[in-house]
Image (cartoon, rainbow, N blue to C red; front, side, top):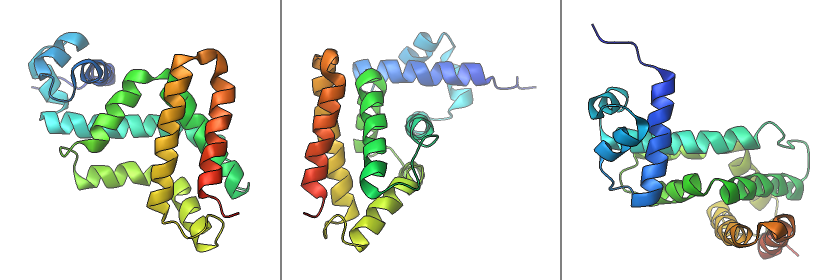
Length: 190
């Protein structure tokens, strides 16, 4: 009879995978992840039947963590700028303090090993923000840029902002605000 799965072991495997993938990339062997998690490699495969399953679940876990930080205080009744500013602050704070997670999420986002269903689920986690972008474009608030372009500009400027915050954490708030202003000025309709 199989043992019941433990959420603690599952989380230990995901944490170890984050650390190992951040250090060695997504091609790191599962044996190394299992060793870092303190479990047998067979145990890893009890929780994640294939390495692709592990990658897909890790992506969803990281996206879910970010969403969990963003949503509780999300200003749904505020204007577009305030909603975008909230999303920006949370994302930049997370990315500048969770370096391994940020690195791995970026790698996973580029990986061909993620399923389309996983990508869609990851995007669904941010449906409020995606709807805000689409509605803002439709109403002319953001000009006529496609929402995917606006999201890409936000991501690129956020990454740059996070890099500068990591280099000089004493200027974190100032740098975050300057980054947001650059983003907003780049995408908003004059």
